[in-house]
Structure formats: C-alpha cells, structure tokens
Length: 114
Image (cartoon, rainbow, N blue to C red):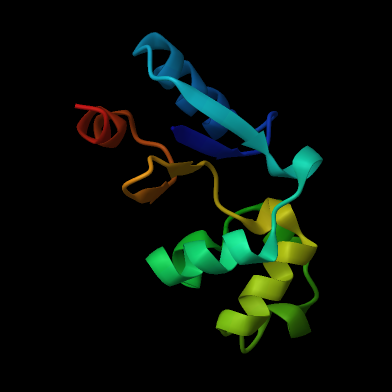
C-alpha cells in the first residue's frame, strides 16, 4: 500500500494528493502534524535516502530555528530537530512499498506509478 506523509495544509501536499486522486492511485494519508511520526520511521527514512534529503531548509520552520540549531548539523542532530519540529521534514514523503520518494513532481510520480 502506498502511504503519503505530510501536512494537510501544505500546497505541495495538495498537488501530490490531487495527482494521486486523478490517476486513481490508492493511498493512505498520514498527517504527521496530527498523528505524529515514530523515531524508528524517521530513522528508516534517513537510512534509505539520507537526512539531507529530508530536512526542508527552505521553509519558515528552518529559518525560525536558532542559529545554534542550524550550525554544525549532522545526522543525529537533524533527526532530533525533525522529531521536535515535524514541519522540518520535506513534503510529501511517499512510501510505495518498494521505494521512498521525497517531494512532488508530476513527471516523477508518473514514472513511479507507470
């Protein structure tokens, strides 16, 4: 089963969900702002694609972090920051059962679900 992780009100999430619906892809939506995210799950994602791919450095949550939190970031620090501030995780995170994908691009989703 495909699961899409993110935050309901995120514009990128809305685009991804719209694409999935239009292409009749069955999925579960996991709103990690409401439902949380297990540390084990996040660590599994980090193992698969690396913490750098998961940290959203463009968002307001990142910019609002104290400078000390943003400096010298490494895997352990990134994981803790993401667990403490779930909106730091890039969206959407898509688990297909085979692979993990971060972000949304219609052409990439077309390849994933071809």
